[in-house]
Amino acid sequence: MKKILNIREVRQLPKNSDFNVMGIVSKLTRRKDRNDNPFWEMTISDSSGDLEGKVWAASTWRNTQGGDNFPIDPDNCGLKFEGSTVEIIGKIAEYREQIQYNFNDIYYLDQNENPPHLFVRHSPVKNDFLEDTFINLIAEISHEELRNFVEAVFFKHGLWEKFKTWPAAISLHHAYTGGLLEHSVSVALGAKDLAKHYKDFAIPVNMDLIIAGALLHDIGKLEAYSISPVPQMTLPGNVIEHITLGYCKFMKLAEVEKLDEKITLALGHIMVSHHGRREFGSPVLPETPEAMIVNAADDLDFRLSYWKLQIEALNNQSDVTDYLPLIERRLWRGINL
Ligand SMILES: [Fe+2]
Ligand SMILES: [Fe+2]
Image (cartoon, protein in one colour):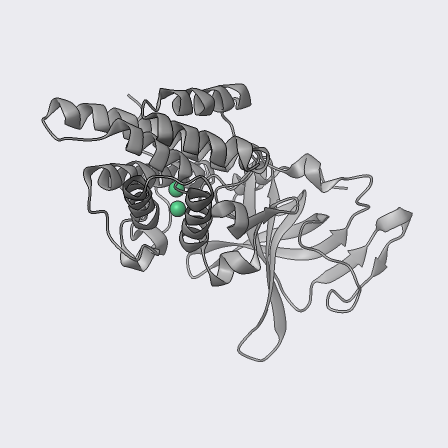
């Protein structure tokens, strides 16, 4: 029996290597090839990363629960693969000069012996630091009505319990337990530094709006994603999207808390414009210094964490990633100075 590797170790193997890996199925999509044969695109995840592979029609699927080991038809076996722990035996191939992971044998494991939560990734930043910083940031808001509102959103209306464990995405960036808190705190601290800088350069920036806007900007993700136990997109997430979900939630709470109309407008503008481009889901572009700064901090936080994820997934032999259509470039490891 081959040694079971983690996903990071599999990524370091050269092409033509065989591998044996265990993880949770975070995505499974059924497709058809040119000859109408079914195949699946499967992503498995563990605490070291994600691995996307192809499960071709000739691959075998087996159920090994309760000490059994028998072949199954993934379409008609009554087992839910997404969110469950599997073992994969596969081979690394090359297709059109790109590495391809072929998953040849898929074993559905005993979920009690290999509970999926053991494979879930967590924020690499200390939880206590994130929670304390979040609470201190609210306390820094000097405008009393605004501070009370932000406090009420998270602590009176019960968002906090979910917020502190939620992922900020299902892939790409902060797609793990605690990712939303990590991302929101990072955006708020980054935006605060930018605001301080521009204040010194005679641009009028309201620090209270910056902090409140940054902490609230992604609350729509609470409805757009779920953890089961890997981050998944919900139906509202798919068909409404987190910016609209977040704005609706914010407007409801602003009404309940009787938040001042002008503040509601300024904060609402930061929320709906935070992606900075219409093609990225923002119906309007940032029109105030506060909205521009939150957008810049959000965008940079996404790009840097995406860079980290992609570079960590790189094979030891390469310094540059494949072309990444999402950000219209390759990413480079850079130099060690
Ligand atoms: Fe967002
Ligand atoms: Fe964000």
